[in-house]
Length: 83
Image (cartoon, rainbow, N blue to C red; front, top):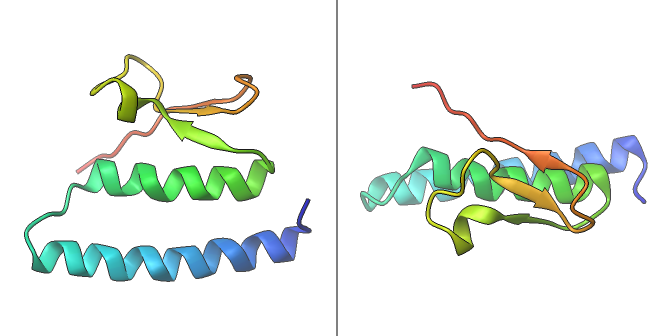
């Protein structure tokens, strides 16, 4: 498992990449804030908790109550965006 400073470095690098993807998607009219943030949150959870997370909305369009779930199915994440 990565140490705290290494995890923060990975998250910072991912955020920079995420920002670029948002700019490109905005330019092409393809931006959906919730979907983009779920992609970001999956990666942050993977790094922070040291296990793989999956997005339940990929399998079921709008999965009820939970957005992300850990590989061991013990951690659940809900993504809420306020516009």
